[in-house]
Length: 130
Image (cartoon, rainbow, N blue to C red):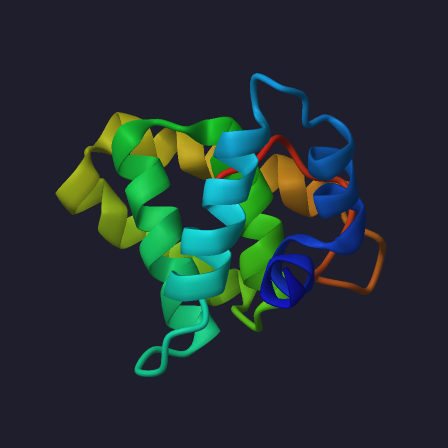
């Protein structure tokens, strides 16, 4: 849960936990255990690389709501706006220009919503994507 809070922000995790019910508890528990307790805590890749991989997968599958959340997480993990731009540019070749075009728009919207002089807005996130 510590890594999940560090990456996604405490407010997001608190909202996700508060929204759990009998129908979604198993899903939230699975995310916490496997994504945040196993994958994101493994040695071998820094969080910046894990963020880049996650962003690329979300672009490839067109999951733009989750992409927005992970743009904020990537900034929190230490990726710069220039690095995010390069990730999206490269994704245009491997994931398709329309997907990258959407990703650029979403990233611009995220940047516009950030506090001045920061690259992170820890607690304005969409629903959960590990």
